[in-house]
Length: 141
Image 1 (cartoon, rainbow, N blue to C red):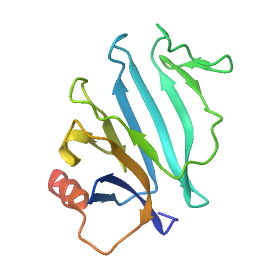
Image 2 (cartoon, one colour):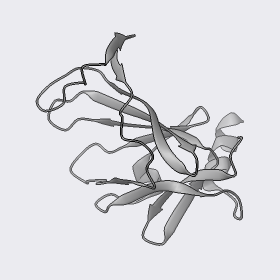
Image 3 (tube, rainbow, N blue to C red):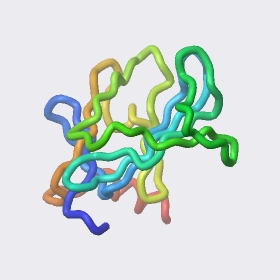
């Protein structure tokens, strides 16, 4: 990892620092039941979306005009610039988010309880033993 910043998942004072500077966030649209994905990375101390993908279009969720169809996804790069944080609803009435990093994926509900807003933000790496590293080590055995 080239950055001294990692991506953290924060809920109140609970912080889960993921040992990476890149993540993929995915979820199922609650009405259209179609998969969405966004690839984030840290750049210049902030988050940026490298690519977003949606499987199909539907009510209020059409891909932008510059999207291209490739490998079963509409792919595009949102032009929203750098983000200090991303806030997720983390509703208990939806299937929930999945977060992937370094070839490892975990349901967001395994990191933080559902029903409260969750923040994803750059955070300094290190300092504590990461739960996520222990999970990856245990699955590699």
